[in-house]
Image 1 (tube, chains in turn green, blue):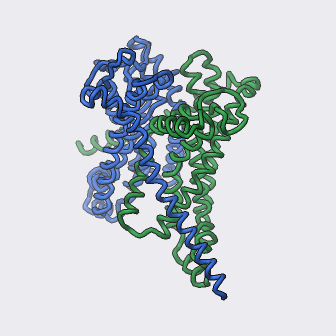
Image 2: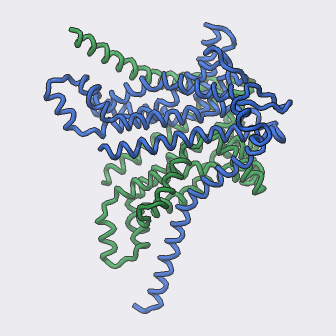
Length: 265
Length: 292
C-alpha cells in the first residue's frame, strides 16, 4: 500500500515537472508571439533593417573566421595528435573556452580587439570575439562527426594511393559534411542569441553599417536596449518575436540536418 | 613518379600538418590571451585595494574609490543556488521521463521542445521575465518586482535545457542489463529507475549540475534586466541584488581609471569561479569514464 502511494506520488511529481517544462515553453512562445504580432507592422520592420543587417554581417563574418579554425583543430585532434600532454592541454583549453561567461568575452574583446588592436567598436571586433566563443562547439561537433566516419573509408582511400591530405579533404571531411553543417547552424543560433559579448565589442549604433569597421547593433542587443530603456515595449515585443522566429527557423534547419545524417549513415 | 612531384606532395602534407597544428594551438593561445588580458586589466585594482578587502569589502562606491564586491559574490552564489533548487528537480525528472519512461515518439518531441528552450536567446528570457514575473512579484509583495526572486526564476528556467540534455544522455548510457537485472528481481519500473539507473548515471548527472552552475553564474543580460542591480547584501529573496556578471557589465559604459580595473577585477573573480567549476567537471568526467 505504502509502496503504491509512493509510486503514484512519484509519477505525479515527474508528470508535474514535465508539464512545467512544456507549459513554460508554450507560455513564453505564446506570450511573445501574441504581444509581438500586435505591434508588428511594416514601418517597424523597416526600422529594424539596420539591426537585421548587422546581425547577418555578424553571423557571416564570425562563422567565416571560426569554421575553418574549428574544423582544422578537429582534424588535428582526430587525425594527427597522439594522446599526451599537448592534447590534454588543448582539450582543457576548449573546455575552458566553452565555460567562460559571455560577459568576460565581451570585456576581453573590448580591451583586446577594440582598444589594443585599434579596431574601435566595430562589427569586425564583435565577430572576432564571437568567433572565439564559437570554437568549442564547432570543434566538438566536427570531432564527433569525424569520429563517426567509418575508419575503412579513410583506409580505402589511403590504400588506393591517395595522400593523407587528399584523404582528409576528399573522404573524411566529405563524409562528415552534414555534421559540420549542423555545427554551423548551431553557431548561427549562438550568434543570434549573444548579447553581452557583442554589446561591448560591436557597440550599439542603430545605423545601417557601411563596412565591417562600422559599429552595429544586432537584434539581441537592440532588444536588450529597448527592454532596459523601457520606452517602447511594443517595439521590444516585436523584436523578441523576430528573434524567436529566427530561432525556430534555425532549429528546424538543425533538425533537417540531423535527419539527413541519420539517413546517410 | 618523379621526385619533384613527391617533393611537392611532401611539402603540401607538411604545410597542412602545420596549419592544423596551428589551429589547435590557437585554442590554447586564445585562452591564455583572454586570461592574461583580464588579469592584466584587473591587477591594478587588486594592487590598490588589496585582494582581501576587495573580496570581503561590503561597500561599492566607485566615485569614492571604495571597491568591495562581497555583496555581489553573495548575490551570485545565492542566485545560483536558488536557480539550482528550481532547475535540478524539474530538469532531472524531465530527463528521467525522456530517457526512461516516455515512448520513443513522445521523448523525441520532448527533446525538440528542450532544444527550442536552449535556443531562445537569454535576452528574450530576461525580457519575458521582466514583463511577466516581475509585475507578478510586485503585485504580491510590492517593491517593484525587480528582485533576487525574479533572477532565480529566469536562471532556473535557463539552466533546464543543459540539465535535461546532459542527464538524459547519462541515463541512456546506463547498460540495459542493469535495468533487466533489477526488474527480474521483482522491483517495479520506477524503483528500478531511482535505485539502479539514477545512481549509475550519478557522474553524468553531477556533470549536468556543474554545467548548470556555470551557466547560472555566468549569465549576464537576463539577470541584469530583472535583478534590480542595487549593490547591497541581500537580506531577503525580494531584495534587489547585483551579481558579479551584472557588476562587470553595468558600469563599464561610463567607468574610467581605476574603476575600469575594478570591473575587470570582478571578471577575474568570475573567471576564478568558472575555472574551479571546470576542474571539478574534469574530475567528474574522468571518474565517470573510469567507472564504466
